[in-house]
Length: 90
Image 1 (cartoon, rainbow, N blue to C red):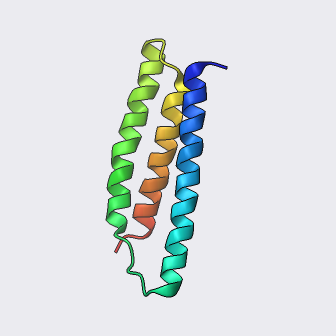
Image 2 (tube, helix red, strand yellow; image 1 turned 90 degrees about the horizontal axis):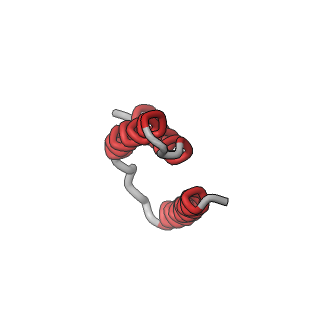
């Protein structure tokens, strides 16, 4: 397997495991304390940063030898953050 693909998949796996642990810890803290509602506007702005970065990577893949599979996760994660930010806005 290509080294870049291996590193990308390993990074994605670490990110998903970290996110799962974070969700479990936040759920546990929410049950014990009256946790505050998160600021969903931050999720929106993180998505605004990730989507263009992913688009740049995709454009680089069409203009040079940069692999396409690097930009797709950035766009996907950015869209998820955008949707979370939009759905929970005040």
